Image (cartoon, rainbow, N blue to C red; front, side, top):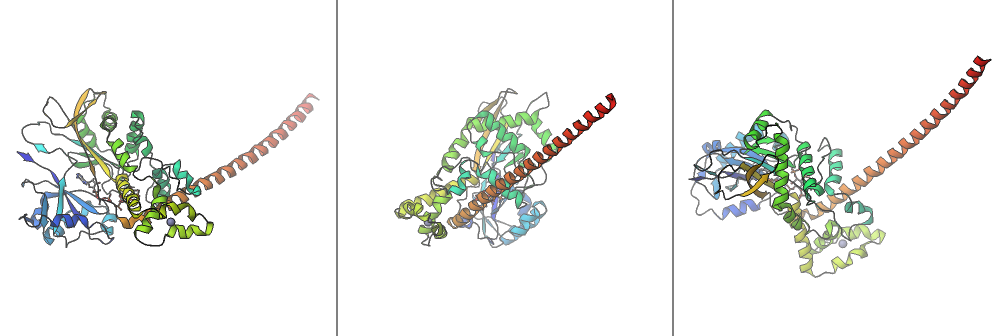
Length: 440
Ligand SMILES: O=P(O)(O)O[C@@H]1[C@@H](OP(=O)(O)O)[C@H](OP(=O)(O)O)[C@H](O)[C@H](OP(=O)(O)O)[C@H]1OP(=O)(O)O
Ligand SMILES: Nc1ncnc2c1ncn2[C@@H]1O[C@H](COP(=O)(O)OP(=O)(O)OP(=O)(O)O)[C@@H](O)[C@H]1O
Ligand SMILES: [Zn+2]
């Protein structure tokens, strides 16, 4: 018998105008789904995580699998009440479950292997969730000179400074997406280690579907990254290491899988659909929504808008393609990758891909999936442009401030050196005179 573990996505009340497409797609199944979940059914749904738009619950009951599920207001209210204690308070304040939804979306739980009873005795499963973010430096000719730093420094790194300044994070991430997407095994390993050291909202580990490491709330600054004993004990079920270095080997396993699977190479291709950067795409956007181009209007003062005339004079379908590709790329820059592992043991019939971990000489089944694939909405384009400019200008300012501070420090050091030198010379002169006194 196959028992599928599923997760349930409940749309929040769209107070911030978020995501109604999930609800729309569910209504299609209305006619043929008979069961409606009631308040008592909430016990079978456990909190899995959440983002800005969705609250994600995993099914732990034994009912047959479904694809779309109708729900009652009572079920939604009971679920909201049930998980309240587990949700981060800032998420609770930011959004409520929409009690008017009459249906929710069931999707496969990618943090587990579907359980097939009788085949696997040791069903222990460890999963990682990685949000790799954008992994390439733009080369667009439309990037303004004052923003040229974007071609050298990855956005993630610049954004970290702004987030630190805004209090969204307490320390700068050690992670560099350029390592992750480098195609070099050593650099992928470095990226995984960095994620482990500073997971923020980019790295989580689940043991048998329950969060074991990293922040649950999806915020960039989750408080508890402590390694609890349960996590270490859990890893011992998967990784066989007499030297006790389970974490080291686990990180190697993740890096090996990412490197071998080529998953990020394919993701990078999609990210690169953003060929002309938001500084180019924004012009096409204004034309598509038939609004005057605010960027050209602003730049008119310094006679730079001519530079974008090639974009404004393009045929409409090309402009549409630019914007569509930009939004697809943005989705690819914000999605997460989930990889689940279990020890393969002697089972040769497994339908899953295999990875071999050289350090422990173990073979693992793995399955990898991308999650959070909701297409970014067109209306975000203006916001993307503003955020991009904010990130870059803040970074440039910080670098300039730092240079100024460094220069000031150098001056101070020079001054101090001068003072020390003259003090030293004075001392020497005194010594000489003392010496001459003594000799007299
Ligand atoms: O702009 P970014 O790079 O900060 O990405 C946002 C993410 O922030 P991050 O920097 O990864 O912590 C942000 O993540 P959090 O909610 O902060 O965990 C969202 O994923 C947001 O997408 P959406 O608005 O929910 O569709 C993301 O917005 P998009 O820009 O991808 O639309
Ligand atoms: N299919 C899945 N299997 C297991 N866990 C999942 C699945 N989908 C989502 N999750 C968990 O729930 C969390 C939130 O889901 P998701 O990112 O889709 O929500 P969102 O509201 O769209 O987030 P965002 O703010 O990034 O847009 C994920 O980070 C992940 O931990
Ligand atoms: Zn323009």
